[in-house]
Length: 123
Image 1 (cartoon, rainbow, N blue to C red):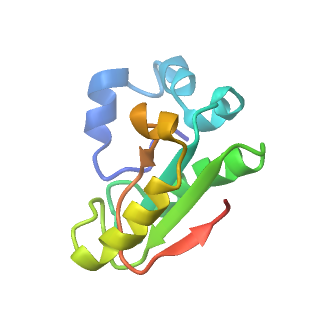
Image 2: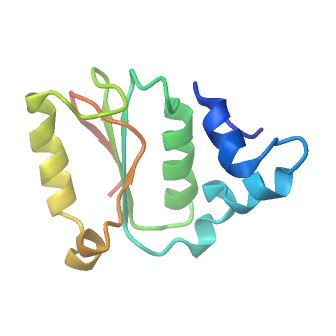
């Protein structure tokens, strides 16, 4: 209900115990505030990201696209939490360049991870 990470101690330190302070987690849960998101978003995720499971990225993408928000999803099956391989970069640069200039200037990107052979959902 509260986290699906390999490092729950990080969130406990910042938000407290989820069983004792669930309101802190709920107040910062993106899927509960998807209606309020107006900045175009590029969700990026690698299938080998064990820090943030792919379901988190897919849920954000689905919540935003289901509300007709300007969102794209880049999936890289051979990457992890960071985009490290040179062959992953062209897809990332191409799709980031397609965002409106104001979104790039405000860093309106959500990076949930990284990756390699690029598949796009939406947009």
